[in-house]
Amino acid sequence: MTNAFTPPQSSPPPPRRAPGDEQIRDVVVQVRGQGGLTTQATLHIASLTDRARFMRATRTSALLFGLAVVSLPIPPIHWILVPGFLIAAIVSFFVRIRTDELLEGHVTCPKCHGAFDVESQPPSWPLDQTCHHCKAQLVVAPLT
Image (cartoon, rainbow, N blue to C red; front, side, top):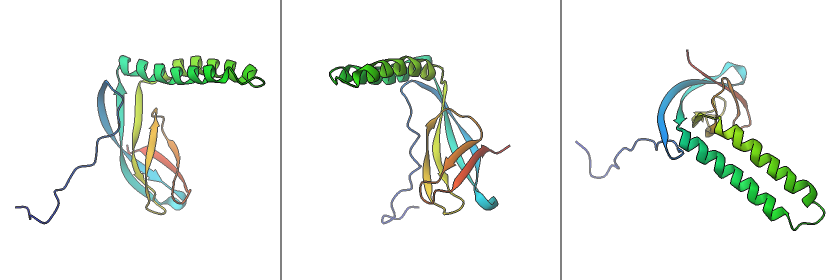
């Protein structure tokens, strides 16, 4: 029975996902800090479809191509900026099209107990993170 004065309990929001994600699986990880302090967290790994990977890669490359076009009228530095942005657009397209999984979630620092987000990135274990609150160096690894 619920009380009329207590707010309903809500589950945490789902992780941000690119359109067309196939599936999301959860991984329980251990966050190790300095001095042997540990906490546990759950991170989400999203497996991307081919269409979602293509859209991510195209979006990033289009942004870099747009920066190259905007850099054209800047006389002395357009000799470096325009080729640099065009090369970065091509390289980033091929790097992002090969990324088939994205990892994100929330972890708690074992030192200061501050919660922060793990930014969206390909999963490669162990992850090296820095606490946004106390700047402690953390190692995030899955529990086996």
